[in-house]
Length: 136
Image (cartoon, rainbow, N blue to C red):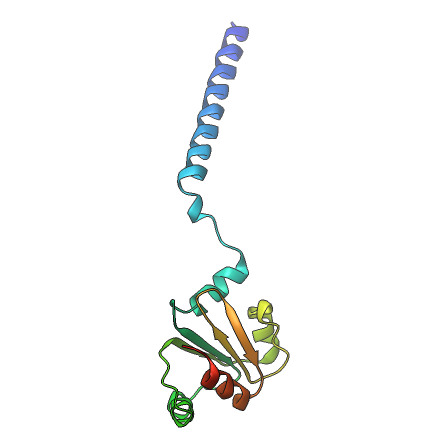
């Protein structure tokens, strides 16, 4: 009798394991977009701009948009920014949070398009100059 019980247990275990593999396969195939993205993509993707626009990101300083817009208007540029994000914090914290940006000091200014980072500087004047010359 023990051999019959062991045989049935083995068969049931094999069938259950096989079903779990099939379910895992279908889950992977049909829900693969739910697989977590790499940390760099997850942290930076909200910064990417919509097509034809740029997004601005600054660390270590508040980005005064009225001041920036005034400087750009003086240069004859009237851009549409997808979004503007400023982040405060200690240098070490921001370096750890955004290692892919390779922040060396603050303040730092970044410009993103729909594909990713297109410009980085530590100079506000260079930042404004880049935005003034950018082809929107």
